View 1 (cartoon, rainbow, N blue to C red):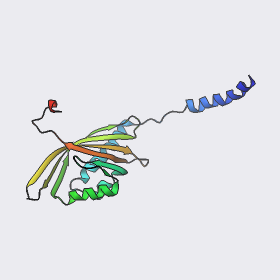
View 2 (cartoon, rainbow, N blue to C red; view 1 turned 135 degrees about the vertical axis):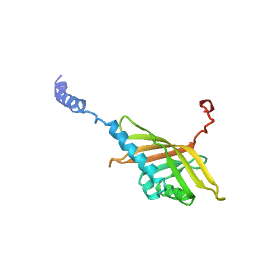
View 3 (spheres, one colour; view 1 turned 60 degrees about the vertical axis):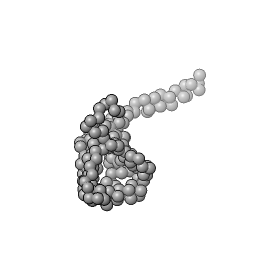
View 4 (cartoon, rainbow, N blue to C red; view 1 turned 120 degrees about the vertical axis):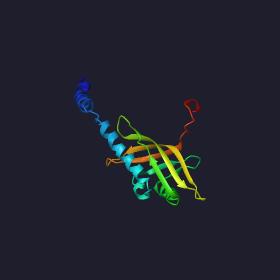
Length: 165
């Protein structure tokens, strides 16, 4: 009994200390606005392509998963891969305003946009394609959002229907 009485203050203090602490509240509207700004900065850096501006928006351990190609990991390989776009004649990327979602805890989010990419092929013919572009973003300790996963695929054509999915 004496032993129980000696541990009671410790138990009571633990309940007060841990039971009364609150989880920090996340202002999801502010986080969505912040992520929207980061996504817009990414899209602006794509037209015309500005590799240095884009690289500031990727995390060190980012992954790019292009359709039909191997995964590209890390900033150095991403920078090298992006340089291919700079070499395309008349490359242009026009993004529609993305859908933005942020996790309840505010640490992760995603942006989903449609982009029209155009460039001249080796024969000088204009090529245009529409893609769906998904970015998974991570909130960093400095308050910035960084892309951790970048993946896209071809958007369905106008003749497609939901039955084609």
